[in-house]
Length: 241
Image (cartoon, rainbow, N blue to C red; front, side):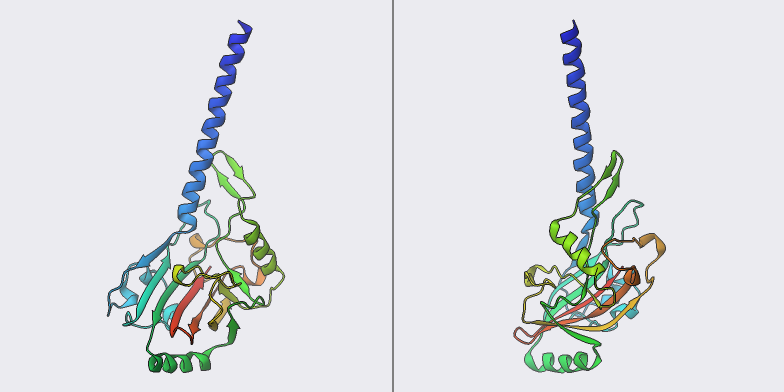
């Protein structure tokens, strides 16, 4: 009789553990969806960005360096969803448009941005703050989950904390231009920061603190372009957090 009771209890414990695992996995899946909720806009020449769903959810002053219409050489457009879940993790709001140009047009645009930039960076410069989604601890319905981040992201978070007075840029993750450089862009790209300021530029419900950033840059925004003379490609970007 005692053995039967132990078997029954053992099976119940297994079922409870299985349910916990299912809850954990479900939580992680949901987290992954909201944590990296980037949407791509389709190619449609002549579209006004400021009226596209997603791009019209941000103050247009952040996009004033973007092309007003979708350029002829449009390659890709990305924007991040605003997530206001109570227990959601730190995730910046990014807007990106990628386009290539003929040499004459590229050179003309390049000259304008070069003169307006506050700093020029190489793709592999490490003397910058990187803004990226981060969630090492998450509160779920079944408890607190810890050590969720990769070693790389933990290293980058520690790196950021040590550079409190440097300029922030996004950690680029663009399928067509992925690289293992510090910024995430191929080495032929140069990054021009046009403006970067600390402070609150989103509604409080979208703001999340992050151990991956120094106190000065707890919240803020940065905008600029990344340009490749080799490819005649311009990446227009803004990140707000």
